[in-house]
Image (cartoon, rainbow, N blue to C red):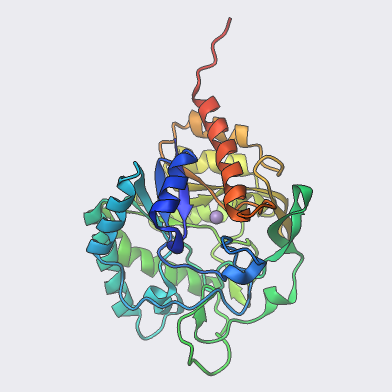
Length: 362
Ligand SMILES: [Mn+2]
């Protein structure tokens, strides 16, 4: 296993590459689309999206080019960092794939170009979340140790039930001028059909290009969010989803915090299953207390999940992929996000290093 670090698009620069390397990362997961309001929490370095009217505007007009990707990869290579994955398509690239709209065909062709560009640039994994509502309706508060600010859910709030306005998908606005009210509610079967079409269009290309498509589970994992179905809200649902198109290039962007939030879930059993069946693209690791609809994100060492046990399972299954810390509570300093992430990195690195040591009997 390898330690990575996720960087948001405004952090894709030398300063943050140095930071990631100094904190022990050898690999980077890069977001090329930012999806948050910096002002959310009064902290300039805190990428936490909590505003239900949307996290921002999807501005990209064309998919990321080979030149753009290779220069990104080369830039971080100067700091001994490998670009392991891109996380999230810009909603502007694929809103009509998610919504079954008129530009679907054109958008599939563009995503194919993107996957081929990634293959050519040698970027192994594309992470995404096939979801209409995306991450939504979380609350924010002093939930973690010592009153550190983190996110969570406090029951089924009005925000959970608020329908999605037209012109928005996956918590981002792709058309500022859209009118006509709200997205129509679709059935779970309809969502599954859209995802199956996505797989049948893109997986053959991904296989050819040597790129892994990695699906993030819906977060928060509840049956219905903003009047739209979720692909799944239990680890077993995602075992089935992986079988929609069983290919070594179809895997999970396995978010252990999300699995832990799921009702009646056993995160260890699920992790063992996905690891054993080679269904992990890369891992998001964070800790959490409680399960939906009432849970709080915690520091990595204080939640429900035993990180040492996570490492044992990964070691037993000889997991060779990358683990990145997911979100972390903010620590009260000048740089709340950086400090929170640095704490998570240190803890994960120690657990990882210790799991790699052979235990010798006397
Ligand atoms: Mn995650």
